[in-house]
Length: 130
Image 1: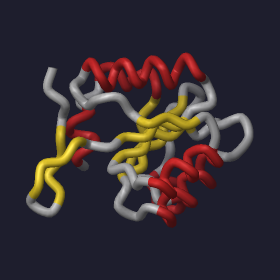
Image 2: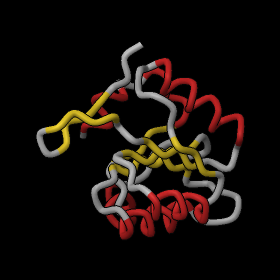
Image 3: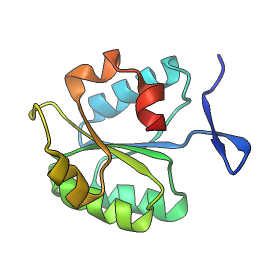
Image 4: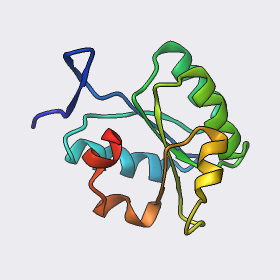
């Protein structure tokens, strides 16, 4: 299976993705979905602290971030990720929220909101490309 790649500075590189969700089954399911879709296995984090530690080592191109983390507000985590890694495309997710306003997205540095119920049917290539 081919791993999807992105063009960065004229070079083809594997797309680095970070999944941040406090639910291990959700992280596992998203990881499997991304592999099936040809993106390769993502990095994962259960908390905002783990996400920031991962990003401090290597900035991802895409972050799928649950806004309802157990220990920290996902909007605050998104803002800290945006500050640490301004090139990352931060996509907020939730199973409890139907929509996030454009103003909320802008205020935390996120670029999109994707309900978890829609992840499996969404064109992730298009979403990740912007």
